[in-house]
Amino acid sequence: MTNYIKTMPKGVVQMHVIQVLSLAGYAILIGMLNFYLSNEAGFTKVEANTLTASFFALNFLLHFLGGALGGRYFSFRGLFLTSLILQAVSMVLIAMPHDYDAIVIGLAIFITGAGLNTSCLNMMLTQLFDANDSRREMAFSVNYTAMNFGFLCCFVLSGMLQSYSAYNIAFYIASFLLVIASVLQLINFKNVKDHDTYFSKVFSKKKVRFAIMPSIIILCLGFSLTLIKNPEYGVDLIVSVFFIVLIYLIRLALKQEGIYRSRILVFLALASAGMITAFVLGMQTSAIENFVEYNTTKTILGIHLSPAFVNSFETVGVIVFGIILAQIIAKKNDLNKAVYPTTSIIRGLVFYVLAFLIIPFGILVSGNDGMVSLIIPIVMLLIVGGGEVQINATNYALVGKLIEPKHQGLFTGYFFVSVAVGVIASGYMANYTIGNQLNSHEITALGTNQLYTNLFVGLSVLTAVIAAIYFFASRKMNRVFDSSL
Image 1 (cartoon, rainbow, N blue to C red):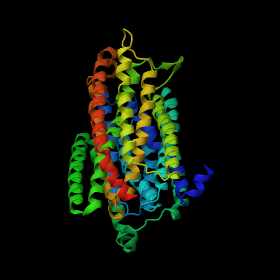
Image 2 (tube, rainbow, N blue to C red; image 1 turned 90 degrees about the vertical axis):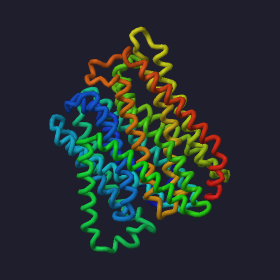
Image 3 (cartoon, helix red, strand yellow; image 1 turned 120 degrees about the horizontal axis):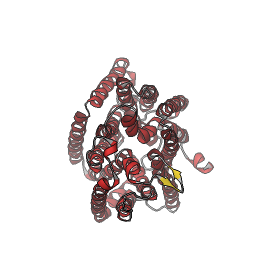
């Protein structure tokens, strides 16, 4: 670890620490939002599933805005700091369980803050390295592991507090951690300057920025509030934005010459794998938590585990496999061997194929009451973590490897819009797996096991087909990476 700190540019390690703390609100909402809405805020189960999926999808949609606005009308570091402050405020509002307006406003503020920050953090990290710096992949892998260490801590915390229905305490703790992250970002501010962006070269010298920047934040807040209150519009908007941006980027690629055109097309192809990861993330916050609650024994070795706590095992998988992945990358770098992102993504998809088959297997060997051993979703989530870290850590580093600096914010944003589409799909599937029951007491294991089997077998087949397509195209895509090394 000491060697890692010495070899990395100044500011990288500080960003790993900030990453851990900055995810407190997001991680706790992943673990608790669905049950908080249905158990404390008066939403039906279908409404909670739909709003949860819409909430996280809108969060990723605003990642696109963060990528498009950051580096142009905001510095990445300034926008990230603003996002942390907004999240800290939002968690206090969400903690008011019987105040519908406060919860909705809090969710809108949180989406605005969290939605804008991930693109910024990735871009700050990207800009600390030259385009051909082999340390970038290792830094992103470690950062992804740090992110999931933060998730693990928050999942364990939220799982413990969920057992006592102490939702508001969890939200207040998240707010406090976000305040600490804000202070650390201020301290690290000088290390993460924008490089060669429109903001640093042009816009930072214009006085009009003092009017434009707050206006954009206010518009984003209004936009988020409207879509939180009308989640059905949010779904249509996200899907529309995805296809519009995809068409625009394909046209942009076709206008380029030679190798850069190929690099853009390879990025678009590989970024699609992130939609599967996003779908699984969305399933964790809804369908998988519902499965743990209504279709499993909820105990292991006599210990009762809440759905939020069970989610932490996915993060354990990410951390363990993330460490292994970082070591593999380091060894290959030492041997001057190329690390092909295509290989990592294919390997991650194979992990997903195996993981998706775990639930149907558990249902197949369940007893007459249909209840499944809790070890089944735990094993599934551990394997999912192994797939996620190989796909997401790779995708996050693709922008810096393949895309020119002037386009990096836009392509980072596109990646998150594609992720939003995956999360949206998970909401529909979550409602499918509970038979669209409005009330939780009507959900039974025997009534839903076949629905879960249908879903996960179908996902396994689809993911296997996608992995096969990538495999047969990998040689051609790897030639593009060879030209970028």
